[in-house]
Length: 152
Image (cartoon, rainbow, N blue to C red; front, side):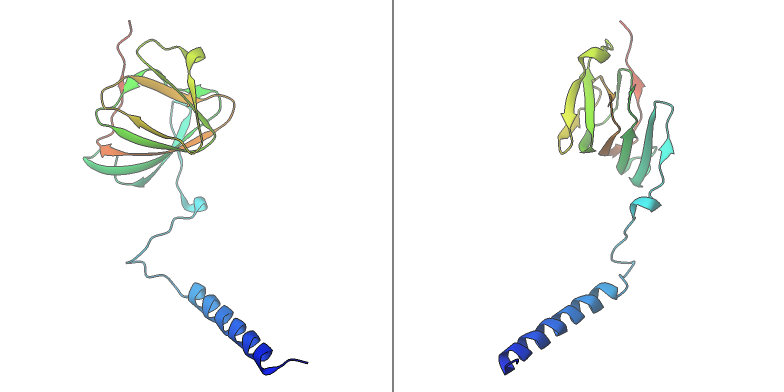
């Protein structure tokens, strides 16, 4: 048999669960928050063997941008630079990076998921993925142009 305290605890737990269920079922105010689920993120293929999805901003214009970049396995960029600093978080996979104008894909250094990298403006680098896909989040100030490095 249940005693009064046991019944009160059960009633409290059910009431609390009901409150949480009701709160999660309410609609969010679109003026306060915007959620983009993975299936609604628009990925666009790039000639370099990567895909990108612009989350915030316009890369061709001045201002803040946030982009997801997915490097497909066995694809790398050639040496290049960007005019502004870029701040990159490796979301998944291993990103492979190199610096300098001489393209040396065998000397790329691994950067594991969870790492944070800064690409400094006007400094030459190249990067990509080796055996598996890699997803990066890139944050910067546009315009986000890319300039190929002069060949030596």
